[in-house]
Length: 506
Image (cartoon, rainbow, N blue to C red; front, side):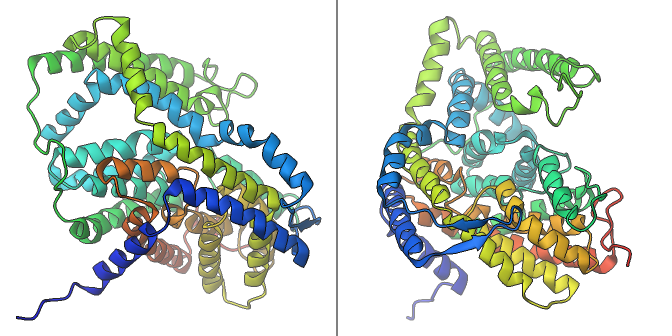
């Protein structure tokens, strides 16, 4: 009897996973990559690699770290690289609060309440949609939603890695889509406006320049993410056979009482936040301008996550009887830190690699030369926008920061496309598509080490290959699906935002 071969896609993803996991431990991999960056900087410096920065007009040269000056910088800034690594403090502070919420039993009870009351057929859609929406609150999706999605999938008897993948796809793959404006919108709009001034010094770009397009994209990404999870990722993973409670226990009287106390505490906290943010002179708004986008509220979102988790966790514990003394609170924080030992080790080496890569200017040279190569092509408006999406997606694999890439790319493409009759707002929309879709397969993405750690909770053998193989279908489908939406948008001539059309007057 002949043995039936697996379909092509599962075999390809298995090969990707096998090849990726054949790589060394992520800690050793980042250490090796840091060493390779030093060597590459030496070779690039000897070869005289350079590029002209389109924003400043200055020549950007590769900096040699394999020199006395480079060695001094590596030694003197090693600690600073680690302590200043952006995701580290975010994760640690958020996990301190979440540790209390978890140890008190609040998270488990709240998840069981969701599972028992929500239609299971909509679980994937809700997870992906929540991931997309979480981007309005900065990093909350990475540190809160992704691990909770794994727990939630496990609670209903589904593979927890599928839950992690679905949430990661929404949070990172759908990074630019949202129904709400976030901190990234005014930042990118400001850079776009400066680039547009090269052609028209009076041109104004609103922070809501892409709102219409990104609002519709929210539902497209949620639908595509659900489709990929249920048709590709979860079938490939198969049934969950690891440890963990797959059933959902009914809520006890103590659980319900604790949830009522937590809901009351959350309501009071929400009322306090509303007083500080809704009125024009609210105490959490920017004192100088009254703005909410650039305010202590948005800048302190991680601190608010910590405070919120502590408040609802302690309130639940007091109501359910699981928190009786302050020692219980401190113990919960300590247990949360115990689970992050491997992540902290990984972050140390990842931080060195990212810092070295930035110091050498290798990322800048690659990004600038790639942008100029696309600019030399003579394409029509729609193909040019789609080619721009692909270029941005490729650059995103080696340079993670959305604002840093746009600061380099915008001065080249915004004026060039304006001279071709395309609005800066459309160019920015195309950039945001490309900037999002490859986040989930880029080890350069700041939170990628954390995602590997989450995967290892359920599969100790998981590595970079496991994560990339799970997320590659999302990246491909998002790239084609989101690009198709952009092409359709251009074809229909729809404005990408309030007052933001697609073409400029002749």
